[in-house]
Amino acid sequence: EDDEKKSKNSRQKVDAPPVFIMPDGLSYLHVKRNGLIFGCSTSRNVSPTTVIEILSKIAKVFKDYCGTLSEEAIRKNFILLYELLDEMMDYGYPQVTQTENLKAFVYNEPILVSHVPSTG
Picture 1 (tube, rainbow, N blue to C red):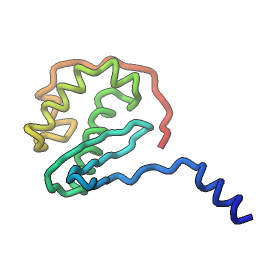
Picture 2 (tube, one colour):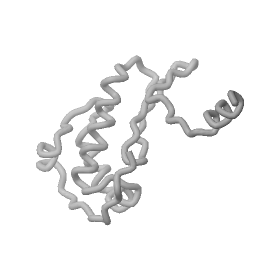
Picture 3 (cartoon, rainbow, N blue to C red):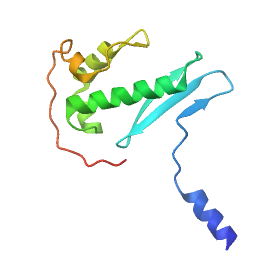
Picture 4 (tube, one colour):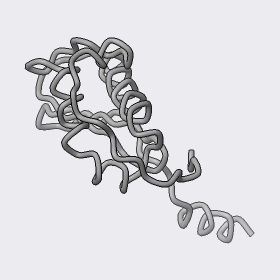
């Protein structure tokens, strides 16, 4: 019976932890939103909480502009999202991260796609 439980547990997919610190000194951080992974890698000593917060803000702003957060929405709005990311970050440092404040700097209009139900 214990062997059966162990084999079931080993077959279940488990999400990776949001922060990996590798022996070579690189750190990998990510957040998962609606089935999409927003990631960051760095060789510097950064606050994981700050990076997770920034990645979460990026995902939120993308969703605010596109209406839905999906792979199709990212593909169709790539130029807009690239422009947003360019305004949100300068040389790796966060600048403007509020949706309302970004509207003054971003000129592209979103291409609407059909809504995808949230997956987590």
